[in-house]
Image (cartoon, rainbow, N blue to C red; front, side):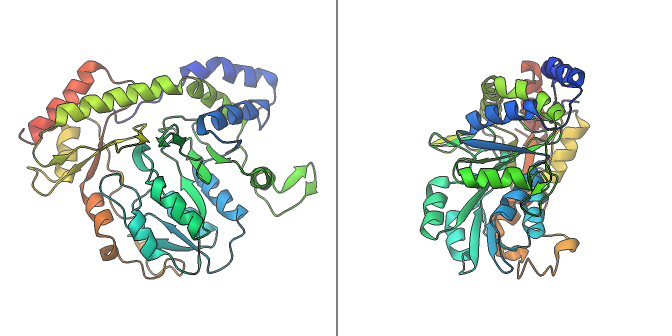
Length: 368
């Protein structure tokens, strides 16, 4: 089986052993070292490490002191953590449909979704390419909205030379399958000194110093062990990203002309880091998306469906008071993409022969 992703963190062995031998494995100097390296990648003054990407979103929302009834606009086509974080922060969720070309929130739909209670715009940079921040950032500034970027899949991505996570408050995931992983972990990026300090206090049970409590906080800390796993990946991020970009280019060229299959696009001015290589299996393809996924699995080509439904289309969210009036039919592009999206292997450890096999298998089963 050619896996959809491969995790290789062997370069971290020396740093992990260093932490273990130190006898101090909780948050400490290795976390600070990781934060400094991550801030450099994101092009921000501050990077605050936390224990996962969901925490990054929750803490960022909590830092804004939202009040009951305050609204957050986000994408209906995303991982459930985006929605869960907003609900945990007690905000009301409003969705805006996405664009098919970048899988991200449509700026035109955002203008229709905003109300007088909207306080936050939360674009999701999906699969490794940013949303259209050239339109979203000016709109947010005009309407005095805070931007929280769900950059979970976009470490190293950029829009017109500006890194994901630098347009407002950036939230990154370091889960095991991400382009940079600490097994579990997350990062919040910002240029705001006061906000960064607030987040550091918030993540540490509200303590600025030992038993000096300044707010009702939480334990959102990252450990030095986790940070040690991530540091070597940040040091070679350019190399790892270049491999993903090369693999994506090869896939796009090889899959060109496959009946019913739309390859993902790299839009002008955007640096795509290819967390996932996601094709759309259209209605005129020989097989449906689910049939193609099954055929590839049977032939030893790993794949993934990210995501099979719009994010609120589950029983546990139906009738939720903080998700008022959300209907699947109101988001036709997101619904169509959820029915058609299929991710193929693009990770940096693919061999030339594996790439050829992915291309040949897809083309074969779709009658190319």
